[in-house]
Image: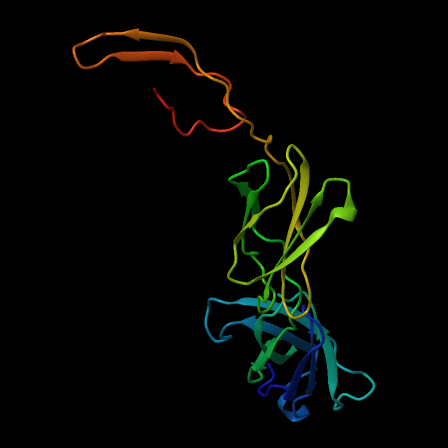
Length: 245
């Protein structure tokens, strides 16, 4: 097998999932056979340890000029992730030594969808919107964007930009018994990621409740009685108290 690794290895990120690698072949006297090609390996973590993720690409040797610098693109990498890139030369008996690792980080990209989107405290005029961060941020998280509108009425669209620490917001001034479309997106320096979308109907507008019926008095004692009654219409809301006179 070759006793020397390729030399002068250089790496440059070309986008969020690929890097370009340049190298020069080993000294022909140290290849110890016929050069069958090169293996470009991108590692997450230390290549010398047993626990690591690896992306590998095999490149044939140059037939025009075996001593000339070669280059190749390694794709299929994770976005905004640090890799250690190595290059080795191999012959029929096996792989030669790896070159010293060169550290490179793939470019930043837009984030994935937020993890979830749900609602709480739904009333006729307001709703609380909650979400979780995206599983793949793909960069440095800068914030979130909330967009909402009356369903099928894009002219009513409103947008709110929120900080990266905000995971819930109360949306007010809604119309009662109306379907609204909500979108929440995360964003990095590169831009806004794909939105997670949900639709909800605002609550029915509350009105004054109606009086109870079937009032009855029982268990009459010297200083107390038991009152029984059937609640009336609740006014599309929760009864908070009763007044007894």
